[in-house]
Amino acid sequence: MSGGGIFGVGTSALLAYQRALQVTGHNIANVGTEGYSRQQLQLGTSQPLNSGFGSLGTGVTTTGVRRVVDQFVEARLGMNLSGAGYERTYAEFAGRLDTLLADPNSGLAPALSQFFAALEDVATDPTSTAARQQLISQAQSLTDRFAQLEGRIEDQRSIANGRISGTVDEINQLATSIAQLNREIVEARGRSGGRDPNDLLDRRDELIRDLSSLTSVKTLEQSDGSVNIYIGRGQALVVGFEQTRLFAQAMGADPGRLDIGFRNGSATVIATEFMTGGELGALLDLRDTLFDPASNGLGRIAVSLVDSFNEQHAAGMDLRGLAGGAFFERPDPRVYANLGNVASGIPDLAISDVGALEASDYQLRFDGDNWVLRRLADGERLATLAPGDSLDFDGLSLDLSGVSGAQRGDSFLLRPLQVAGDLSVRITDPRAVAAALPVRAEAAAQNTGAASLREISIVDPAAADLRNPIDIEFTGGQFVVGGTSFSPDPSGDTTIELNGWRTVIRGTPAEGDRFEVRDNAGGVGDNRGALALAGLARQRTLAGGTTSLSEGYAELVADVGVKTRRASINAEVQGRMLADARAQRENISGVNLDEEAANLLRFQQAYQASAQVIAVAGSMFDTLLAAVRR
Image (cartoon, rainbow, N blue to C red; front, side, top):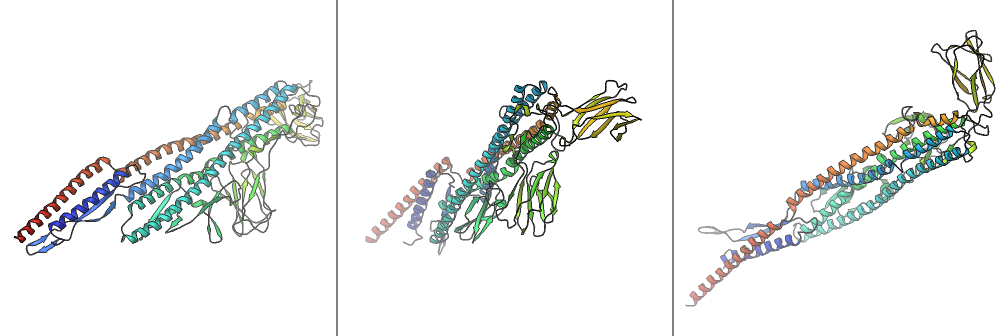
């Protein structure tokens, strides 16, 4: 009997449905296997047999086992995995930072309130040693609070660095496995005549999905069945059987900032800017959008407090009759040279105007001819400077005269505000608190006019003749001080500045009226210095004179809070999108036990029917043999 006879038809059907049952059983067995894609046996009719009265069917043949996968759905799932990994990681760290800064007990706000309350106590009783000691104690608590907050921010930065290193190691492990599977898939296709090894493809796709949660991934399938993997903004990770091994280490100016790099021959290539999406993208972005702004915002408040307080304190007089010195101490702005710099020396950076400070770091980069200064908070290019130039910008003073021999690509990182963790209190003796002012002013008792002294303030505490006695006399329609005349201001407030002090006379004086400015030696009950210091709590010293210290901290907390809320919402939305993408893939590629059970029953019946066909064919063959024997 020919292969096209009934026996051949039954045999082909028996083999086909045996394989169909095997595929169905394989699907059922892997219903719980993560990343498994259900498979379908593809059947087709065998080549028909031509006869004198037409073509006869010769049975069924198996053309292959198809893996039920929609590549567009797979790509969408990968993008959502990357997005969900990014938003989840960002929201995690933002939530921690928000909790830290906004805490009503451990945040900066209560420490500021307690410090200025202690100042009010000194102003109430300037001769009290206990009140002065309490002020020093609260000042130390305040500097400790700054250090604690900065330390907690640095802790989060360190945790993020550890996660970056761990994530890079995980990416390398996944890349190694994908490259190995590429090899196995290509070899399996070669052995099977170009047919896909479905289970190996599932394993590779699952690894790619794992990789997608760590960083954004693009794939490009090759004709031999291998897949090239590109991550971030197009950095090749796996090409055929080869992978690019990444590493994380400090390679720039900031020793605490990890970069992502790889080796290209003997050269090291920094690829940080190409890493986007997924957990790694979030960990890298956290530094620029969350940690650095928070640290710089905290540092700006610290610098404003220290410098304005020191300036006012230096203008006062302590219980010993001495000029008040610096109350706090802070470190100078930090400048870091890039590890690969050829230039010798570093730029000189100083704070020149506290009110104009921006909460940002800066990059200074040599382009071969000039230095380019860029603000990192918003990426704005601020200036181009020739070698040796100097510049005032954003409340800072920059001098390049100490830098020489620069070559193209040399750079410096300017960090003027990373100081909050290193503040200290210089005053340890309660008597050294300058609660008074070194001079006093009053109108002479015999004055007959309506003018009065409104205030006196110190503008230059270092002036040599600050405490010299001075008489201000109104004569001939002028205020005369020594040989200097001041015309009355038509507004009624006349400002007179001399010998390092400034006073305001309000009202209309009479001819011969006199005002006296004298040394305040022995003025232990004077609280004007303490009142001026306490007034700094309300004085707008930040953002060009528009924001007070407490308002500046509130803005910092609000900024982190907004970022946290946005990240939380984005993580929730991205989570729903990921769940939808997973469900869509499951609907297409997942194993449905009800469907497989129906297939199992259907293929079992087909198998039994095919066996019956063979049995009938055998009976026919036996009948034919018996007829021939007769």
